Image (cartoon, rainbow, N blue to C red; front, side, top):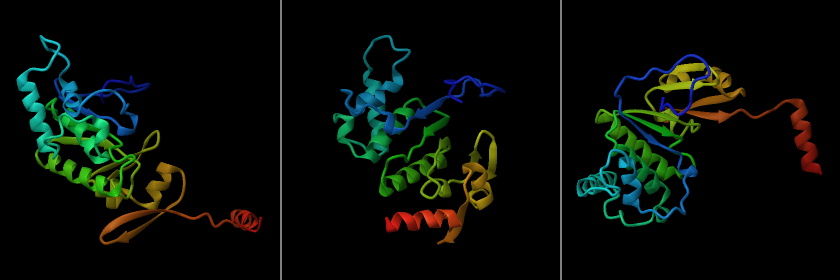
Length: 212
């Protein structure tokens, strides 16, 4: 959808002129790169400038974006000095500075704690409620996928589409991950569990390891 990878078959159609913002996995970021929070956000405006440095208006807009995401006053800090949740918000602020109509996120909860995951969920829900279309990838079935309004499961092909209640089922998950999984209801939410391997051969191996 970003146009970074050419399809091997078929095609990807995108509305002409559609503005897209992208948030990478924070695990792929070089945290030793000498850049401040504000400078990171301003990287969204590196093209189309007459001068190589940001204008006062761009700096003000970056500060507004940071303040909107609860990062006001942190612009002069190095990005590695922030918490995981704050770092993720910095890259969301950078994407928002592009004034996107569609926001793409790659594994936004990878490597973050439970509190940060909830913060990101609430933030994305607020942005979506304001009219921003959001598409993200995730392997976080319980922490992330179970809270999203619409899911598409992929394993070289589409294995399931719909709301979490229709998609987070043992049948769809086995087609997606190639392994049996159990799904239970807890507090009105679907919870996915790995199904233990109770085959006779596996039980014998486990007993042998225990006695060894």
